[in-house]
Image (cartoon, rainbow, N blue to C red; front, side, top):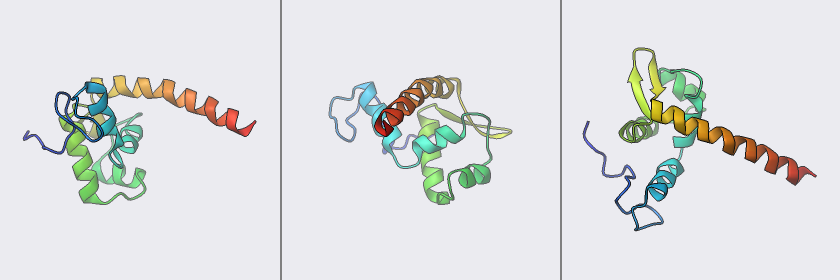
Length: 113
């Protein structure tokens, strides 16, 4: 697969950082519009392109294609016979989101108090 020069990569400057530190590349990648949503929608099962587009509230096909390409290059998403799915690395990242999700719920509750 040809590398997309726009895909944030550890070791190279990214938006907001010239250090190339892996955390900065990850945050840049996940900060791209729709990237987190795509990963979130794939958390339970693979989805076809059309199903993923619908799950993402009708994101345009060109943007979805672009984000999927970046997420595949980052090795978080892969094509399977059942559609797009999280890779083992993507599933591990999803587990990390679980802790962040719980924290966000706690934060939201504190704001309601």
